[in-house]
Image 1 (tube, rainbow, N blue to C red):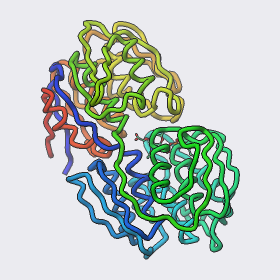
Image 2: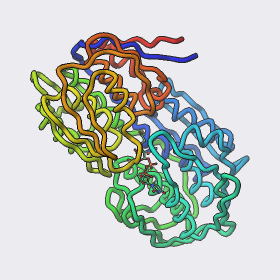
Image 3: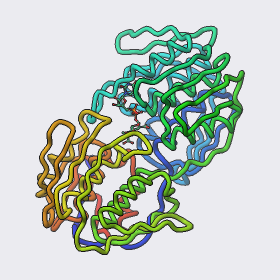
Image 4: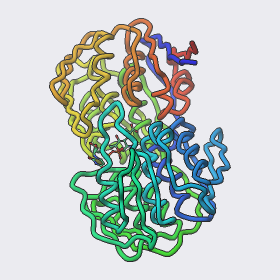
Length: 422
Ligand code: EPZ
């Protein structure tokens, strides 16, 4: 059954939104179960289809899962493994499945993971994931669409320099190095909050990691890791998405548990747009009581720069600004697919390579639109909230990968949205 979201636009949003646990921390956190035979307990895990897809893979590999996702809780235990092969059907559904490669090689001495393949937003190369394992001593062969890694005598620490910042590439390397012999230094490592939190989680399991949150992470390998109980931090991308919902509807929302520091540059940009941002003891208040929205250019960059995962959502806001803004996407080669759909709603956007020139219009008009990827689908929902008339967003499965209970969260703040199954 296909699901669509029907949105009646023009209603300002007022109220508060509970920000759920961070998808891009929950995924690597779940994978840490492969590094120990003890039980891992995770709380504040977002109930998302990406999380469920990863759990299906881990169950296939032999992990014992006590899943209570309705209460955002997971207990995981991988005492031993029944397979070290991650088949294509699992990996193609959820690219972050590549994260099982490092942990399986370092704990079990072998792994065979299907190439994830590209996705809507780009080729999504994983050459750096593979290179790192080779530098740690794994023997790698590529065999009919699988990456096969062997390290029967375990891995050995090494200095690894990343030519470009890669979030999951850094995470895979960290998880491979925690059980390697000796010291590993990751240079030009990703400094995203999700990477920093993963290191903190691993240290609660007995890992010896320092430098997390900086571009040089040092890992002193240990023999074994033990279990842990760990709480997943709030999702900065979900929070940023709802911040735009408040701004684009000229409303006022409290983003409960949102961590201001994780969105500093993003919030600074919104303030330049004329949006009021207020830090509070339990989150961040976003208010737009201005008639006009100032156009401000952005250029996406690794953390702490303007997050690529908020680029599509920000573009929706710029379609109704009172001027021209330039939006540059620097991380992925095909992350402007929302432009075609926003244009169907009356937006005035010209694309030149990885740059979109957005000329603000008086208002958007509701239309039937097609979600193409996770964050593009969020952008279309945001545009629908502001548009005059009815918008129907198709292929809602994209949205459900990364936004827990989005309909309910929006409805509670006055949005006229309904999920329809056809
Ligand atoms: C993570 O993807 C996130 N996913 C993405 O969020 C996010 O957009 C991205 O980081 C950038 O912040 C998860 O954390 C699960 P990268 P990842 O490796 O790790 C190139 C969402 O919407 N690259 O940091 O796959 C790559 O092609 C998702 O929640 C290589 O060339 O991204 C890209 O151009 C979408 N070789 C750039 O690096 C490699 O081996 C950054 O990619 C690895 C990456």
